[in-house]
Image 1 (cartoon, rainbow, N blue to C red):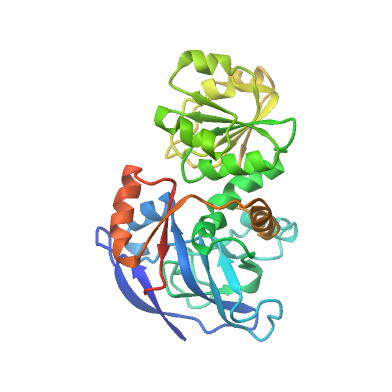
Image 2: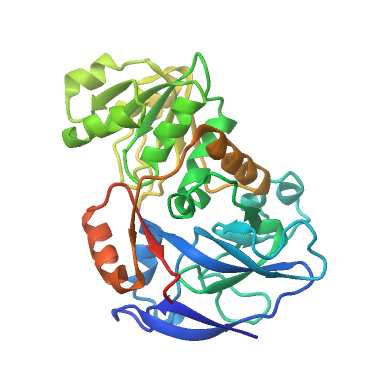
Length: 346
């Protein structure tokens, strides 16, 4: 067993603290990654401040970069000392149609999540990336391309692939106008990717203070959604609309910005069901689609694309001793645009 130190919340309502636990010894197809950086997102916040005692003690974190420590006997394409990265999926059945198509995030048996899901090897729950080491199946361990800063690249393993994959799948590129709803942890990367793919980019935000930030990120236009005239002017101007907010929206004004045959893609998961006027879809023959993370091939493509175009997240790096502060600030929305925890001090 590999003794590991993590940042754990021991029980509901408690503060994070250092906690020692065991990882499995590497199987022949495994890679042991010494984690250096792990991104902090809203999913982690909700989990760590949840109230279900069954999931605690909880080590969260699902977007990691680090250094390969050791490899199993069957791993020949990663070597100790090489830079590595791990995302929010660490296993899948490998047999279902989705897995065989490289869409492991859609595994029919449900993918093995980095934390919170059942650990198929040791039992209990998987422990996440706010820790000194993680043991991962080689299929879900990625080489971190040269030129990508490990701290700023960590969020690419969740926020990056979650936005890049649907932009790729639904045809973002030259001659296409992409609308990004929400300029936050997901949305700021979506703007960067859509611009790099060659699309015209329109940022939709409720916050006038984010206008200049959106333009700096690469948006061609910013629409303030609380301005009825601005929304009316955007009527049928957008081919592909990516919603990164994770909040319950009245979708009708946004669907009216779509061209005929336009597509609205939900990336951020709201806390309640979508509210849609059926006529908003019927008039203009529009589509609603969902997206979540990405399989192995598109994750590799995203990392290579990011390296080629110099795309990383805009991050604020904190150490383990500021983890609680980062959680508090994230809850207030006080970050531009992602926290990353440097866990080398664990």
